[in-house]
Length: 414
Image 1 (cartoon, helix red, strand yellow):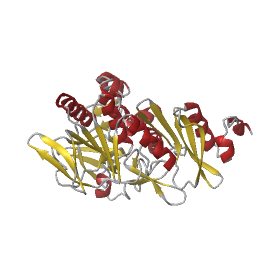
Image 2 (cartoon, helix red, strand yellow):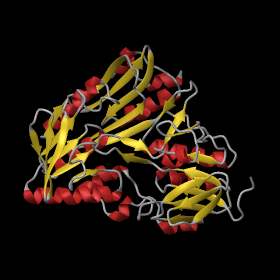
Image 3 (cartoon, rainbow, N blue to C red):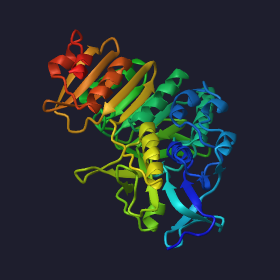
Image 4 (cartoon, rainbow, N blue to C red):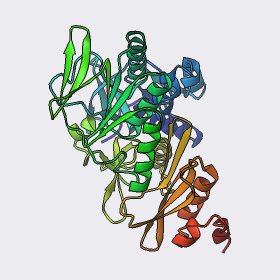
């Protein structure tokens, strides 16, 4: 079908992936209209600081901005905030907006992100039970924390993942009493080796956080002023003036599903961000990337959003720019920076380089004799070196990885 007249490229989602797609389209030589739609009232902003510097009050609104509207305007990228998309009409090549209007497109980028999972329990929607995804979420949590400080109420975090632990660390820095409730037997169990999970548990305990592992949350208790506590399966109640829920996210693939695109816990894309419709690409947290062996992988990171955004834009320009680099992630908790390279699922052996007691070390993950990932704490040099090794498919032995006297960079020269 012929594209509607005056159509350009429409990008649904004004986060990291959407902005990157827009800019790469423009620098790649696309001269048509580019419209960037965001459903929040704010322009593009950085999300990683929300659970840390922004929540702690150490960053102002100007520092949070990723791209100012006037900067986008200079690149002839039309930013529209507070705009929600109702549907995609693939046959007419139009995006239908909630206000009843429609935008035609010659190419469409879906960068719709993800949504925190709600707590499916009695009282889960009580005032003061909050999740963290957006700038407004973070501001609401900060406001509730301030009230907890004034009223000397404790904070409870449900979920011992990265977001939950970062919020817990920020709350402790503010002097609040904090309890973390984690249903699993260890923290960060899906992403960290047991030795590192145990290290993070001791880090938080050392800063005064109360950890309850294998915790079974039964309900949220509240009064007229909002949440008062979290009831556990054994009948005990953990007092709380604020409950932060960090039990994972779900990909925002509803629009894609309704439009008939292939989805499987995310919009299914190839290494270039292409969906099952050649005119539509997708990037960021909303995607599930099909690997060469047919399996699917979901990555939630700034790097993934950035690189998929570039790949998706290139695909609309008729270019091949697959995202194949080693994935990396980071998390800041207290004065410790965790930098992760590669994916450690399936590892059957580990080697530790450095001093875990001193808080400067790297855990190298092996599957058989192959290095598949490395997690570095306050060891940025190790992290960068690990990324180079993984990109080059070069594996040290476990003995070499754990030996500070062995020069791992020498393996790259050979």
